[in-house]
Structure formats: C-alpha cells, structure tokens
Length: 465
Ligand SMILES: Cc1ncc(COP(=O)(O)O)c(C=O)c1O
Image 1 (spheres, helix red, strand yellow):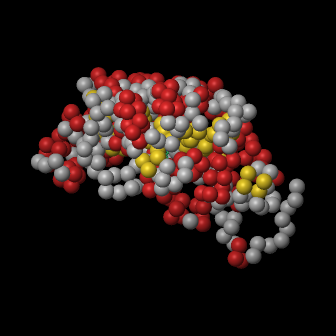
Image 2 (image 1 turned 90 degrees about the vertical axis):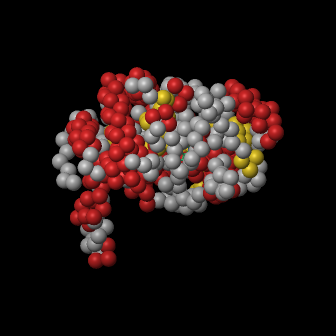
C-alpha cells in the first residue's frame, strides 16, 4: 500500500479536518436534525430513512469525478471504476424491477424525480405537444402538467400544452370515463399516470387503451410507489407503459435521485431518453449518488425488502382502519398503498391547522388538497404515509397508537379553533400558546418515538439539543 510522505501545504490544511472541528455550526445543525428525525413520528408519505450503506456510498469520494456521457462513451478520462459503478447500477435497476434487459433499458443519471420527468418529456414530445396528467388537486405531481388559470407553473405546462384529468370529487377515485371523453377532444401525445397523493391502484389497462386511441405514449411516474412495484405489492406498470420514471428516495429507500426506464425496441426510445438526460438537460452525473442507488437497489432485491414493502402496506391499512373507527373520512374510503388522504372538511378543520399542531407535538405530516377543494391556499386535508416509520420497525399495533395520537391532535385543534374565536390561521397560532394538552402530547410522542430503532443512529444516542 502506498503512503503519502510529503507535507500538506497551508492552503490545503482544512482538507482533512472532520466536520465537527471544521464547521461546528453545520455539525450541530446536523445533530439537531438527526435528533428531530429520531424523536418524532415521520409520517410524510414521500420520506424514508435510508440505510448506513447507502449513506456511506453517497458520502464517498465518487463525488469528485466528472463523467459526462454513458459507460464506455465518456467525455472525460479516468472513468474505469465509475463505468463499473454505473453499469452495476443499471443492471441492478433492471433486476430489482424484474425487467428483461433485451426489452428494457434504464438511465440512472437523473438528479431528481422532477428532472427525470422533464427529461422524459424532452425525449417523448416536441415543444407544445399535448399531454394529460393527473391534476395536482387530485393527487398528481407538479411535473405532470400543473398550471392554474392565471399561471403556467411547471415546465411541463410552460413548454407543453397540458390538460389534466381528475379524481371524482365524491368518490375520490380517478374518473377514467371523463379522461377518455376529454382525451377524445384534446388528442394527447402523452398520458402520464402516477401521483403524489393518491391512495389507490392505477388502471393501467384502461390508461393504455385510452393512450392507444390517440397513438399516445403512456408514462408511469411511480416515484411514490416504486418500492411497492418492485416487490409486486402493487400492480406492475411495466407491462403496459412505454416509459417509467421514479425517484429513488421514497418507498425505494435510496438516496435522493431519479431513474428513467424505457422500452428499448420502441421508436428509438433508448437513444431519445439517454440524450434527453445528457446533453439536453444535465451535465456530469452525480456518481456518488449513482453508487448509492446501486446499493439501495441491491437491498430492494432481497427477501427482507419484500417483507418491508408488505409491512408498509399493512401499516397503512391499519392506520386507515383505526382512523375510520374514530369516525373520520378518508378519501376513497381507504388505501391500496403506503398512504392515506384524510379529508378534514367534515370536522371543519383545515390541513394547515392539523399540520401545525402535529408539528408542535413531534408528528410530521403535510397538509394536502382533497378532491372537491376550491381553496388551493388552504387545503382541506392531510396526507399520511407509513414508509419511514416502517423503516423504524413500526407494525400494525404501533400505527393504531399513531392513530390515537392523530385523533388527539384533531381534538386539540378543534378546541384551539373554538378558543381562537375565528377561522383565521394567525388567530389559531396565537390560541395554541400555553395549551397544556399540546406539551403533554409532545412528551408522550417523544417517549414513544425514541423507543423505536433508527437507521444509521446507534441504539443509544445522547444528543444535546
Ligand atoms: C409522483 C412524483 N413525481 C416526481 C416527484 C419529484 O421528485 P423530486 O422531489 O426528487 O424532484 C415527486 C416528489 O414528490 C413525486 O411525488
């Protein structure tokens, strides 16, 4: 083994100092964030706790390397090992989703889910071509064509013409008949399925049929459910779609990034997707992240991950059933996946108010619009997901306890709203002060949360906050 014998020059003196010494401010903030994650109930449906091995790869010297291009065809030298990392990642991605490498290829370079989606649109469409995606208030994602009556918000509506399809405001299920009817008028070039806040399966057969009526491509964005698709806890979109995009940090439990799968034999999609990523939209790939994705995908292909995915769904069902037993309303009445969408309108609360009290008692979730909402600034529900806490070994009975905490949050919110004497958020925030039930519940939640294991953190942690 070679040993460096020369002295470090003064201008490089900071390069080998651990973070704790070099930058105490950032170090301390990281410790505080670690403790926040450990001491609370993380219910944001798009979040998860990745593994130690993924973190190690993500924080590795692979971050130092430029490697524009694809393995074997780079614009830079020195990519002998980087090529092997990216090839391994591509192979594992196909294996994790049980795809035949003759039929499917994958680009593992997208920096995030949004970038992956814009790259996919670049590959499939010409500027101003027409696309249809699930409307944001119905649970769709910004990148599926979101615009308001006043403004084109997402690049997917700025550079393309977008017409959304929606969930039925009464049942909460996607209205496929209306989609078909509108597609007959709009004649899209692309239909996007997939969502950020939809708790049910997609009807891929119906979607394919509608796409075929117009010679349109069908793209599934499985960002939220990819861990459940890989393990076949949910239906397999690969059977019927042309392109599939995903993030890697939600149910897939990897680092923050995106993937684009494409049918190799159709319309030169391989070349179109790869060149849409680089050089059309991105520069050098983040090789540390690609290595970390490879590690996560290796884990996805294990029987343990299969168990994890099953438990994610069982936990969501247990949580949903427990909330229903308190008499609350869930959009669609339940869930097929990892999340529930809780309609707070029948109890005359907004998502913001429930989110606010949750924050004060160490429960993290997000306000979310629910079908039928008219006021986009004040959504009528909250989205609650189970992937992160399932990574902390929560089981069904633990989610029954989580439901009890949420029930108490809602009871507190109703009381505070009455006390505030108005419907305004600012009055609500003032009325939250010195409410004893809030501090009592926070203590209980903290004791409950810290009794569960936490990936990456040792069993016992002593963090000063
Ligand atoms: C369905 C869907 N697609 C794409 C994205 C965007 O991913 P990212 O935040 O990595 O850009 C999200 C993120 O929430 C998502 O839910």
